[in-house]
Each structure stands twice: as C-alpha cells, then as structure tokens.
Image (cartoon, rainbow, N blue to C red; front, side):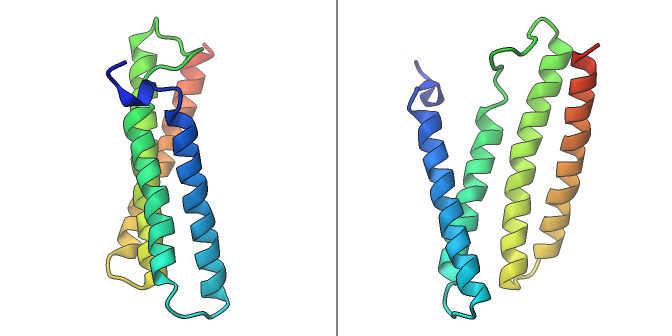
Length: 134
C-alpha cells in the first residue's frame, strides 16, 4: 500500500473535507447576501477547499474503478482523460467564481475557461457512454 489514496480511510476523509468546505462556503455566501462585511476570508477558504478537493479528485480518480471495462485500452484512456479534465475544470471554475465574487481581475476568464472545459468533459462523458454501450 504505497499510495496513500489506496487507504480505506482516504475517501471518507476527502468527503469530510468537501463537506466542511461546502458548509464554509454556504455560511460565507449567506453572510455576503446579508450584507455582513469582512466575510471574504470564509469565502476564500470555502472556495479554496472545494477547488483543492476537485483538483485532487482529478489527480487521483482516473484510476480504473470496479465495473470499468479495462479490456479496452481506448475506453480506459477516455475514462482517465475525462476524470482528470473534470477535476481540473471544476477547480478552475470554482476559483474563477471566487475571483468573480471578490471582484478580482481575471475571474471572468477563469470562469469561462472552467465552464468551457466542463462542456468538453460532458462531451467526453457522452462519448465514453456511447462507446461503452456498443
């Protein structure tokens, strides 16, 4: 067990971190909508946590999972590309959304890049499903 992501405790830990980031993000958004000042740190930590989790999931989960047809290297390559791109695109979109909400420069460009990448991911997912069901 050289890879720490193979540990049975890793996925529940990542789920807890993602839930914590989501709760922080929701609290920060409610405070922002309520007009409370100085909630920028909560907003940054919440979006940052979710972006890190999305990036790590894109880095870690391209490995084959149960039920995946590993006999076809073509389908395996599509799966790995799609999972990596999905994680990276989610991370870029989340950071872009943070930049837009904070009115920082470059937010719209990152948000557009993340959303366009997610559209590519959707196309890749559809291609994978069609090829797998043939």
